[in-house]
Image 1: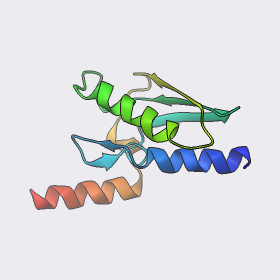
Image 2 (image 1 turned 180 degrees about the vertical axis):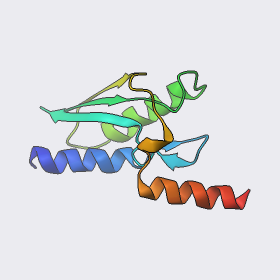
Image 3 (image 1 turned 90 degrees about the vertical axis):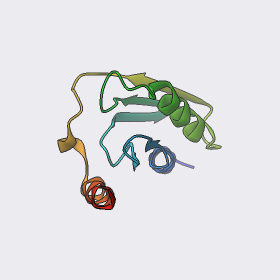
Image 4 (image 1 turned 135 degrees about the vertical axis):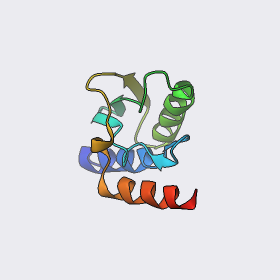
Length: 106
């Protein structure tokens, strides 16, 4: 398995992590700023929608669990950063459409 395939698997695992308050995955929300995969280690730099997020520990734990469950990964490091600040402009089109759909249900 080469590094590109492994990196794609890590991105897919990260897409399985939802922001529990919004209900959209952290990749589509644009919360993952950087991903490096080398020597069976994934280094993830990410943020949250707000620094005072009460579910911060749960989200980080889930990231580590989902990525760490990949057979190609032995170690996961998650670094939370607050700069640059997250804004809705970081959401991709899929997240924007899902957000609109969820709002219409309310």
